[in-house]
Amino acid sequence: MSRPRLPLGDYYQLLLKNGLLADLSPLPMDLTKPVEAVTCDSRSAVPGSLFLCKGAAFKEDYLREALRRGAAAYVSERAYDVPAPCIQVNDVRAAMGLLADAAWGHPSGELSVVGITGTKGKTTTAYFIKSILDLWREKEGLHPVGLLSTIVTDDGAQRRPATLTTPEPLDLQRHLWNAKEAGCGYVVMECSSQALKYGRMTGVELAVAAFLNIGQDHISPKEHPTAEDYFRSKLKIFDQAGGAVVNLDSDRFGEVLDTAQRCGKWSVYSMKFVRDLARSGEGMRFKVRIGEEEEPFSIPMTGAFNVSNALCAISVSSMLGAPLWAIRQGLAQAHVPGRMETYAAGGKTVIVDYAHNGMALEALLRSVKADYPGAPVTVVFGCTGGKGLDRREGMGKAAGEYADSIILTEDDPGPEEVEEICRQIGGYITPFGKTYAVIPHREEAIRSAIETAPSGGVVVLAGKGSEMEQKRKNGPEPCVPDGMLAQKYLKKT
Image 1 (tube, rainbow, N blue to C red):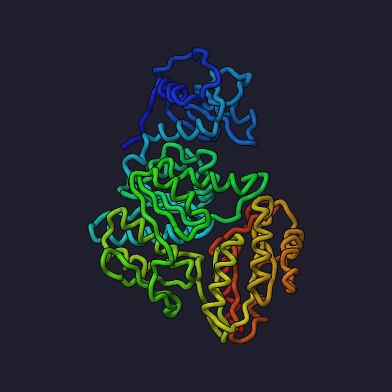
Image 2 (image 1 turned 90 degrees about the vertical axis):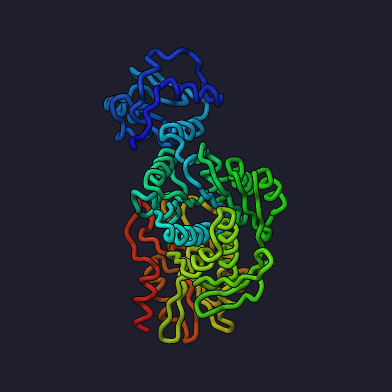
């Protein structure tokens, strides 16, 4: 089925209805003419398309290029001196979400979309839920569900590495439309605070919204100016959800639950509901009461925080009607790339995890200390450049409190110098009486950590997970994933 082609007047009326038009002057063109495409990329403009002027880096040249390619009109917060009608709006981000949803025919209305937000655990929870739903649908002979995650974008038509946790509106709606057309039935997606704050998800109907936790992250001039702004942005997920799942162990859970209860249905989960929690090999086993029975479950990775993620997956899947057998088996066989990947050789253990903020690193290191009692723990990590500045404090304090040996290195330094980022992190480590080494090149840092770790020691590689690019000053550059480096240098010990 082809994408719907709406007349320009429908888009105009949509903006008018939602109070987004800044200029109510009549447009000097035929509003009954179908719009062939809605785009914000001048290279994708075609004759009869509607072009969106958005972004802090927008240049008038982009608009002129779109018009050369045949764009019939443009949407912008300001009018330009160009030979084309301007639909002037007061908030182009909000307009973009509405227009994208309309352009792709509101695909979420024909899917069951699960949205997951939280400071840590979104990706693991998303993979858990996908594993459960896929197993259930496989038995019914149905297509696997879609997944929009930090790691991968899989919409049933294409599968490729993700560039954003939550895609921009036009990309997001295209992925949802692809999933609908492919017969995915469900889409499990991570919902970032930025996406919720700036309306990337406008128009997306969520069957279930899950709120995992809240901590300090993404606080910077480029992201959220305050922790309160970050929290309020995440709460927006419930505005578009029919069902809600809330973690009672989360900070500020009372406020979260109050907001979640506005949804048509809701449920809660907590580690207080867990019984007989124990490590089992490289995984965890536990029991949870469901109905009148205590049901056994297992996951193939360690860490109590991952059991919490599993509880969320159980709650969400149950709300969607998944059978108990699928929930149990789906959790047991779930695989999450770059999350608690464990490698061992020569008496040493290496754990690779995507933990990239203070809350996640603290939970990870505490888990390692509990799972490997008495083992000396070395941690290798860095912080992103140009954003998430609060991570330097949170991760530095977590390492200072829980690690025995610390090596600071690069983790997408972007416009900043690695050494300066590490110096700032180090300022939060030394008050704990700990020293640290700085090895700017990540592979060299990992090699050194593994080679110098004592027998019986544990090396934690935090931050990059299974990522294959390092964002440096000149843009993304290929890099070897931490897991492959762990295996390479363990063989040499």
